Length: 88
Image 1: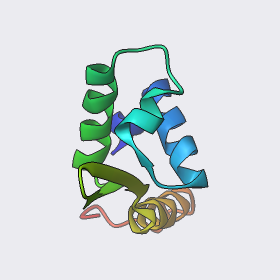
Image 2: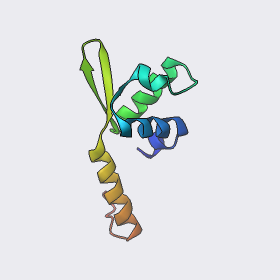
Image 3: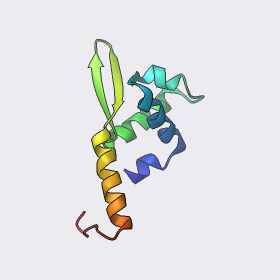
Image 4: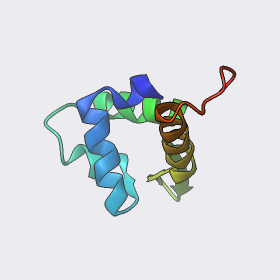
């Protein structure tokens, strides 16, 4: 997950999806990189569990998986307060 959010393009994609669910084409319109590169970034975010996708007809809509963000935030706060177990 940390690797997924270490890239500025992926962080920008996450910011866009905070506003609303979008297709890959809608996301790509915000960047000056190729659509295959956007797909690569989306796949990394999906593999990290940060995105979900939903096929609607011929379109795939991407949305944030907020559960993972909440779990990460809980872990970070616990880590900062020294409450994280070694197994987490």
